[in-house]
Image (cartoon, rainbow over all chains, first blue to last red; front, side):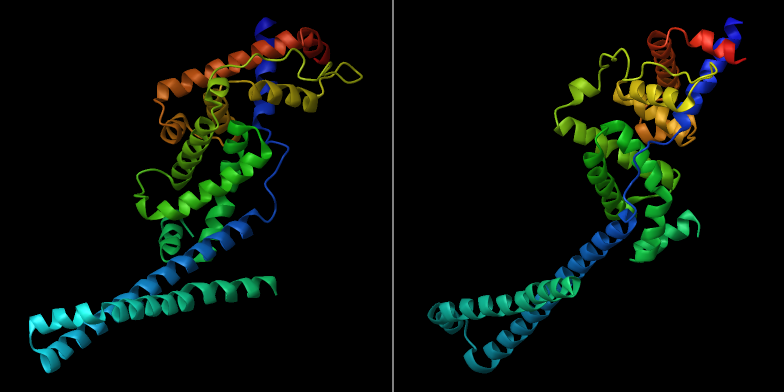
Length: 119
Length: 192
């Protein structure tokens, strides 16, 4: 009799344990997760694009610098003197270039995406 | 689409494959997280963290275990980290005192039969007061039908410990049900 009771009680407890919680995940959980992941992927792609474009710009500048050196300056001392004289201009141009690239790749894309999601 | 194909598609950046993965495993993650942290708001945020971690680390999945076990282990570790960060591990990793009634004064309905919904409420209230490891293993075992091996893979506990925790958790639940509803035996026999 005691055994029957224990078995019955165990069955009842097992049944209760198998019942899922009353609270369920929001119905749009999957959609939200997919949206978050797509957004993350887009940011990652934007960053990769930005880095590639930076590398291409640096490569182009290097080629231009080498050509400029061999065609015009032809002397290391002159090159150093030129850089010393114009470093402010060069640094400013690099900063402007990076800013333009960053604005194009990140800020504009972000604003565009936001306006689309609001619409 | 089987798990290997699903993973391959997600690695290629297929958002629909990711949607399928989330749909297939959200109940497992939700049940685990909800039982481990008990707070709905925290549980929703943690579920998001789990699936973001799954997405970020899908490239590291080598296929040594089932995909569900791998996702379960991420959920388990995310919850344990959360509980540690919250500084609640002292209260949650150790047993809490179990309230006397769980708000239920009777589990019978007219005719002397047991109201199974009320008993479920009592059992769930008792589970919530168990140590987090007990809650986790018992949820995985009964709600998700995981094998001992799978539970061991998810939680990182040895299989023997899993078996022992499940057995001890059930003993505690049984003990508490009998303590809170002393005349349950009478009702069960009357019902027969």
